[in-house]
Length: 315
Image (cartoon, rainbow, N blue to C red):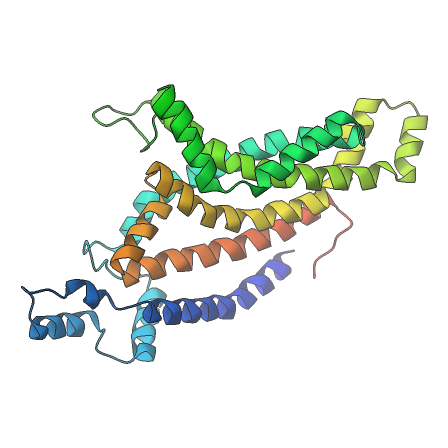
């Protein structure tokens, strides 16, 4: 296993470099941050001096190599807008994003796994059709639209929940206050996660429930609960683990929209602000972090495979 992990990490390095090259090229084509400085009070000579300070007067490939050298020394650069270290900016916001993502994933799976099992057990009945329809609805509804509905219902009309931020301004932000602010953004993300996974759990369970070894287990009188939740569920989890592993990076990117809608102080909010101000170092720092999360999610998924199915061997 350790040999396999080292091989995957070694293979991930050129992939990471390739991703950063593509990201840097796309970002540079989107426009220079110096364009934001143009105005009647700023002379062309001042802009040229600023370009030289930031290294933006060099060709794109030299700008990329300068950035890569800094990254290899553990320095992601400084924000063009706030002049703060990019590592500090990301470090101060990543906790909020991980809290939102982790809670949303947990809530989504807590809903999806029992609902998928229940739907598979009662297949082709009204309860099954209802759950499948709800799962399609949860998958297809856009997160920004659902966020607007929640804000209108629970904030504008009912006034039950706050619609922005992580804590109430002017307060210390105790546990209950944070929970109140999390309810709507977590619900938006969890609806999509549950909608996708209900169908995968149902499909995997239906396939496993037809296997001969489960009929044998039933014939031995083990009991319906153990047959379904111990023998069937463990064998059905392998394809579900694949889907969950693929959803982690998608969730990481999808949180950008939700964080923007609810003004959640996470990576999504600073990413959108960096894009609008063309803050190159912050954008590249977040892109690099996202790429690392994707590769780590794939590696962790492979490791969980071996835990769920001991017959899998890695070399």
